[in-house]
Length: 68
Image: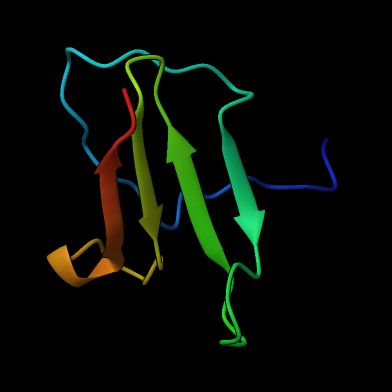
């Protein structure tokens, strides 16, 4: 019996052509707003910053840039 339970609260579908690993994301306060943001970077140089909500919507994506 476990004391902890994991639940998926938010998810996003990204293109199959991009590769990621567990070290290319950060969660925290990225601006002066008091809400946490999720920053994800791919091996191909795409940087995306999200403001997760209960169910993914297009407004969750705050910033997207190709840094090559």
